[in-house]
Image (cartoon, rainbow, N blue to C red; front, side, top):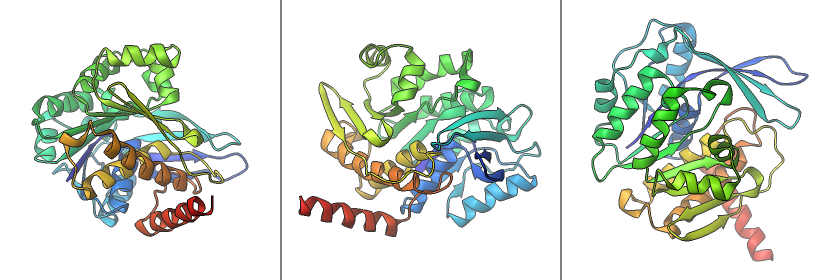
Length: 313
C-alpha cells in the first residue's frame, strides 16, 4: 500500500480566454490519483469536508478506488486554490485555507492511517499547515526501518514565503526521506542559489536520492556520487498543472508494481527506470487540461510509440 499525506482541495482554474473551471485537486491528491490510475493500491490521508465540494473530493477518491484514510469527515469548508494560467499553460497559485477542513486532523489519526504502508509520500501544504505538519512529523517519527519515504516540497511561494512551520518541517522530512522529488524551480526557491550550491545545502539535510524534474528537459537523478539524466517525452503542452504530482504518483506505482521497497531506494538503475516511466506519465498529463494522469492503456501506447522511435533511429 502507498500512503499519501497532504491536501485535497478545489482548484479554481483561470485560463486566458476561457470560462473559470472548478476541478478536484491538491498536489498530494493528484499524486494519489496518478498512482491509483496506474494500478497501485493507495490510501489518501487528508481531512475531507462534508460540504458539496467535499462530496466531490470523496466521490473522486471512491471512483478511483483510493482508500479514504481518516475515519471521520470535517464540518469545516473545503479549501480552495486559485490557479491562474498564463498563455503557455504555466500556473501561479493563491489559496483560501484559513478555517477549512485541513485543520481537522490529529497526529494519532495520521499514524494509524499510515499503518504498515510500504511507501509514504508527503509534501506541499502538509509541510506548512500547523495541524497537518504536526501529523506528518509524528508519521515520520513512527516510520519503521522498512518503510520508504518520498518527499516533494512542491513549493507554493505565495503561501510559503516566511512560513516558519515549513522552514522547520522541510529539514526534518528531508533527513528521513529516501527519495526527494524536487523541481528545478523549487530547488532555486528553497535555497536561493545556483543549482550546485543549492544541492550542497540540500545535502546538509539528507542522503536521499534526489530527482530534479526539469519539465521538457527531463529529470536529473542524483545518488551518492552518481548523476544520471532521464529524458522526458516530447509533447504538445496544453498546461502543466499537476505534472509534477503525476510524476511522483507514477514513480510510486512503478515502484510498487516492481515489488520494490526501501532497500532498493539507493539502486540507481531501479530509480532511473521508475523515473523514466514517471517522466512519460507527466508528459502525457501535460497534453490534457488540469492534473489528469494517464491510464495504464495510455502508458502502454506511449511505451510502444517510444520503442518504435528508438528502433527507427
